[in-house]
Structures are given as structure tokens and as C-alpha cells.
Length: 194
Ligand SMILES: [Mg+2]
Image 1 (spheres, protein in one colour):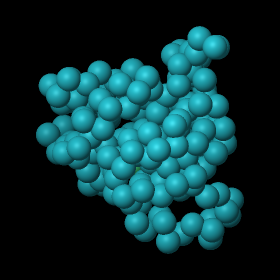
Image 2: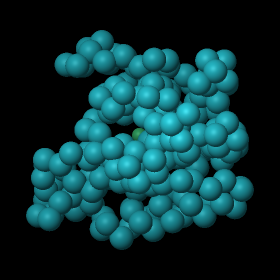
Image 3: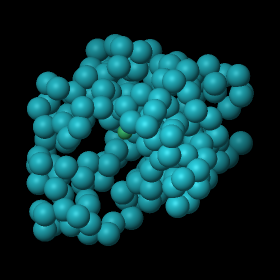
Image 4: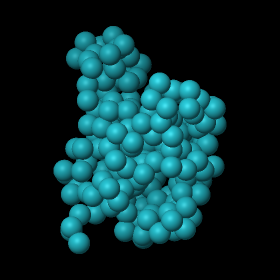
């Protein structure tokens, strides 16, 4: 025993909430109907729940950083109302193509880079080798691959379109499994005894 916890890292938009483009209005943030129960099931299997989300809309000037925090607070509240606590939320506000000077940079946190994963590893004392990432984009899969996580591509959000790009991306990275929704991840983890 290392004393370290295992985690499921989850992308936010298109993975636990509806993908509706750059979300500006807090009330537009909506969880999928099965998200809370799925996260609760993962927690009961001793996984920490960690959200890792690229929010380049901040750097692009679409909304302020405070708006992302408000939406994350809403996510916390909606989940809490259904009895689920999450262990961490990490977001990357940067983009090299941004227009808001303080956020325009080549950072190490924007997925597929692993800055957010490494920060969570330290802050939450996680064992990455027994952890998993779930996302709807190949950048999520590449991030997980780069960090030594097991990787799950799901078909919600951009997932179906991203699935068609598999094998065509420059890195050629492949997920460990492709599943329809977050709900299926729970069964997969049980079957794989992860
Ligand atoms: Mg996404």
C-alpha cells in the first residue's frame, strides 16, 4: 500500500455536462442526468473525483475567469444537491491564440499537457498509475496518455466526431476503451477490476 488514492479525472464540458460551446451564462451549465449517480458510484469504489477542464474562453476574451469559477461553483452545488462531493476542480485559462494578454501563453496546464494532473497528484496525494481519465476529446486522451493514466473516450459532447479522428492525429494515440457515456465508465471499471 502506498497510502495514495486512485482518481478518476474527468473533463467537464461534454463529459459530465452538456457541451454547448463556450459557456458564458451560469444557468446554461447543465449536468447530464446520469452524472451525479455515476460520480457517486465511482466514489463508492474509492476513486477521488477530479475535474480537469480547458477554459481557453478566458484567454480568448469570451468571458472572465470569475465566470468559470461561478460555473464551477454551480457544478459543485448541483452535484452536492444530489449527494456527491468532488475532490478537486482544476482549469486552464490559457491559450497561445488568446487576446487577453495575461492569459496568452504556452502553458504546461492546457490539455494535452499534464500540468493540471501533476498539480492534483501532489495536492491530493494520488497514485496516477491506478488512475483513469475520461473525456470527449482526443486532447483528453493524449493528456491521460502523457500522464500515465488509463484513458476512456466517451461518445457524448464531441466524442463521436473525435472517434472518427482516431489514428489520424499526429500522435496516433488510442484510448484504452471507447464508451457511450460516463454511465458506462462505471461498469467498465467494475468489469476491469480497476
Ligand atoms: Mg470536453
